[in-house]
Structures are given as C-alpha cells and as structure tokens.
Length: 445
Image 1: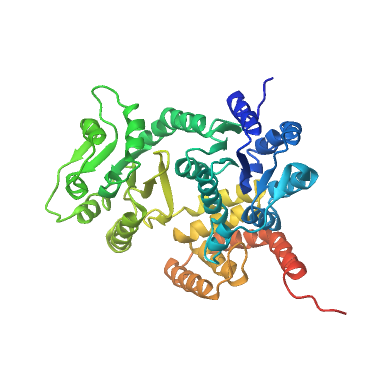
Image 2: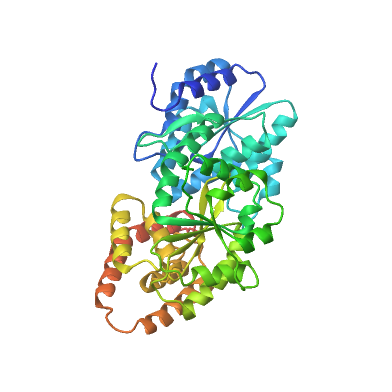
C-alpha cells in the first residue's frame, strides 16, 4: 500500500525491529513536528503501526528529558507539541514514560540546551554495549547522525524535510543518500550562482572535509573551475593535506600568497575590501572562524565601505554540507529596514510569535537599531528569552548609542516599532498570564 508518511524501506525496517526481541524503541521530542502545516508524518507512522506495536508487546520509550521538552514546547504554545502530547495520552498502551535515568542525572545542568539529544546518544551506546538494538525515531538530523555514528548497531529513523512539500520518514542510510543527492543537485548549484566558497586552514583539517569534497566532485565540469578558493597561506597552515583534496585542487582557484604574514592577515586584506557583488562563504571550524570574525568585524567597523561583499561563516556539518554559523554575522551587511519590516510582517501573520522574536534578536545582532531596543525589552521581561537584566542593559546601551548615531529621519521606523509592539502585545499578555497562573506562587483567599 502506498503511503505518504514513510518510505516502503522504512516501514519494512520498522516492522523488522518490532519482531526483534533485542530492540528498544526511543522517540525524540521533535518526531511529532509538522512540516508545511501538513499532518505530522511521525505520528502518522506510529498511528499506522499502533496495532502491530500492541501485538509485539513493544513500547516506545519517552525518556525524562523528552517528556520535559514536550511540556516546555506546549507551554510556549507550540501547536505540534500539544498534538503529540495528546497522541501519547490517547495511546498510552504503546508508550512508556521513563523515570530520570542515571545518564540524564549526569547531564542535568542549567546551562545545557540539548539534554535529550546527548541522553539519547549515550543511551544508544549503553544499550548496544549490552547486546540490545536501540531504535530511534527523530526529526533532528544532528541527533540521528550522532546516534548512528556512535552506535552502528542502532536503527535510526529520521523525518526527511528536504525532499519537497511533504516530509517523509526514512531510515538513516537512505536519508543520508537522499540528503546528499538533494544537496548536490539543488543546494550547491544555488550557492555557486551567487557565492564564492573559501576553504580556510581549519576547514582543510576538518574530519568531515572528505564528505564535502565528495559532493563537490559531482559538480566538476571539464575545463571549468568551481567557485571554491584556497589561499596558499591556508595550505601552509593546514600542513598534511589528504589525497582527496589534492586530486580536486586543480578544479579550485588557488590564490597566491602575498606579503601578509599569515592566513588571518591575508583573508582580511582580500575580503574586507572586495567589491564583486558576490557573497563570500568562509568555511572552517567554529573556533577559528570566531577569531577571524572578530578581526574582520573590527576592520569593517572602522575602515571598510558598506559596499563591500557580504561575508558569512560556515562549518562543515555531519553529512559534509556547509552549515551557517548563526552567531557569526558580519556587521558590514546589516538587514535593510524595509526587508526586516516585511519579514516580520509575514512571520507574525503565518507563524508563532517566537519566530518573530528570534528574527528580532537576529536583526539586533546584525545592527538594526529598533531591533536592539526590542531585544532590551525582551531580556528585561523574559519574553521568549531567559530573563537577564545584564543582557537588557547591554542591549539598551547599544540601542541608545546606535540611535544617537543614526540621527534624524526616525519617523517611519518609530511607526513600525509601535505597530510591532501592538502585534506582539497579545502574545506578551498570554505569556504573562501563563506565568501568573502556573509559575508565580498562588495566594490563598
């Protein structure tokens, strides 16, 4: 029978694990998430397999951290979390909520943000060491690959959202194959049309570079070079170069070294003043690029024309794809106010307020003055961020300084800011109501 929620291969593998006496099923928080407002594929699979789950006497384990995250998402008015909690409640005979495990106790920290992912990874390793077959249901690509890599015996099912309008569940091997095919046929050609890729020395040392090179190899056209740039200073700093890179090097642009002294100085000299109208994608490790970003940011703030090319920062992900590093945004290319206004208007109409809040913070980090003021208010009142008077003061200071520098012609922006506040006020009121009802101590009458 044809299904839209899972591949035939995934369904066959799922059924095989139901008949495996050593299998242990786990579900991740996001497995019930929707895609493009379509029916959740994860819940559709579990609904279709419910009778066979009951017959096999297998239950899907919900670890403590996953249950906790689901409740948090529901408290944040995430509609999919409500649906998933209700589905679990209506099918209690195929689920079991576990008590907090020793592994979760070890991971408990107020600063941690990915409790469940790491707990599931460690549980999979522990189960496999005892001869069990851990089976994970997730829509988190990083979590899926981490579990499959660290516990090869594990059977991982992931929700693939990259194939079009409908998400579909695949087993991890099929997902990796499809993901790379999509990245090669769609994403890389799109990047090549508007961006130049610069592989820094830390990218050349990355253990996942081979996977990126494998995908770039499929894009090679005889007689043409790819828009991939390597600096001689980067080659010198990387030292031991792998064979796959050396074979592909003739298809890259090799930038001859100048009298710059080191890689950082050369990259600053070349890219902080480049005016080609193309995006510059600097690829490397998060640590190395954080230092480079700091150097380039200072140079841009004090010396560089706003017409310089937009520099962005990427690391090589688990499947070899280039993943943007969100916190590293170059200030030379701030979000234009009109674009920000239209994005916020669309976001507030079509999605949850939390998405608008995230966009405000991103715009604030990129230098938008009004967004800085809003970020200060968000941190002061704890609206979709952890309440922090310190962060509020920092953003308030940035806002006041930037507002003073901006000078005149604020009328249209003030109107936008007022309209945004009016739009978000219902969400703020709902949040305050939730806090008063569920968190603040209740006084007896």
